Structure formats: structure tokens, C-alpha cells
Image (tube, rainbow over all chains, first blue to last red; front, side, top):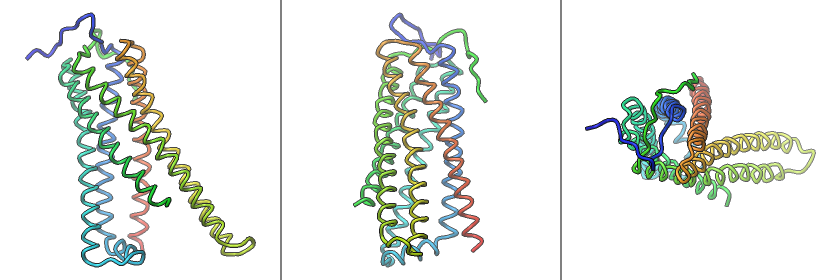
Length: 139
Length: 147
């Protein structure tokens, strides 16, 4: 497998500055992925420690039986799972872009951009859910 | 932290596959940016609606009305801050998407660098926001633990 790709007149080049920017993107993306992972862990600990207070607070707003509590826990687990997939996509993007830069391998770089696309798609899903949630609060 | 030194004298080729995935990522970025603008505007609008609802629920001069107005004002400020965060993030994403798509269409190196710079700034912005959010979570955690 040849790491260096041949260039043509019709291909774009990521010059030194573009590579430097991609390198920064990779570093910061990795950092933000770790930060969000810490956030997910803290949230999980927070939910676990304060579960009784949270269920009590919800019970005062809406009647919660065992089934409703189960559904609530299920929703939290699904959201956390989505967040983890989201973080993994960002982390993969950062890792592949870095590897592509170091080995000058366009395929690796493409893998990084693909993972970035997945990250954007999941972000779109979260945004749509947030908009729907805001809409239901409004009306 | 910033390193603007070129990594190599030789460019890394952005072939057709890379162009396709980068274009697709940019298009999704554009969708995300538009949704970010909508979400930001809705959060601010929701804050204004809630402010009017809460602040207008009691008559003037009422003691309860004054304390409720303070709560409503806090709610409004938080809404504007959150809305502002979403809109700022969306601006970075939109700049990235527009400039990268332009770069891919016109083979313009300057637009490519500018687009990558925009997404880098966006990622730094979101990192700061997430760190602030973690700090708030930790404070909330300490507050609940002390009860």
C-alpha cells in the first residue's frame, strides 16, 4: 500500500497551512472528545447519586409509576448511548486526520472526514430533538 | 497552543474521494448551522415568552410580583446566553461549510484554509463552552451532595 498519493493538475493540495489547521483541528477535537466524555461520566455519577431526588422531583410534576420510571431511565440510557457514539465519531475523526497528516495518506484523511460527517449527522439529530423539545415547551 | 508553522514543504493531495467526503461533511455542517440558528432563536424566543408569562402573572407593586420578575429576568438572561452560544457556534459552522464548498468548487486554496480555520475556531469555542458546562455540573453536584 502506497502512503503517498500521486497528485494531478485537477487535484487540490492541502498546503502547509491547511495541514497545520487540520493538525490543530485534530488536537482540539481529541481534547473536546475527552472533555465531553468526562462530562458524560460526571452526569452519570450525578444521576446515580441524585436518582432519588430526581425521581421525587419528577413525581411531584407528573405521576410516575414503575413503568414510567423505567421509560425515563430508558430514555436517559438511549441519550447517553447516542452521546457516546457522537464522541467516538469525533475521536475517530481526530485520530484519522492526524494519521493521514503524519503518513501523508489521503485514504486516512478521507476516513477522518467520513467520521466528521457522522459527527455532524448525529449533531443534526440532537439539534432536531432540541428544536422539537423547545417547540413542545413553547406550545 | 497555536502552531501555524507548515508541517511539510509538500502538500497533501485532496483526491476525489476526499473531496466527496469533505463536500458531504460540509453540506451536513450547513444543515447543522441552519438548525443552530433556528435553535438559538427559539431559545431566546422561549426566554422572552416565559419572561412575559411569569412577569405578567401578578399585578404591579405586589411583593410576589417583584420576586417573580427577578426570577423571570434571570430566566431571560440565561435564555439569551444559551441562544447566543448556539448562534455563535452556528456562525463558525456555516463559515466552515460555505468556504470549504467554495474551495472545492473553485480549487481555491485560500478558501480551504479559511474554512479549516473557521471550524478550528468553532471547535475551540465549543471546547470552552463544554468546560464551562462541566464546571457548572460540578458546582450543581457539590450543591446537591451538601444537602
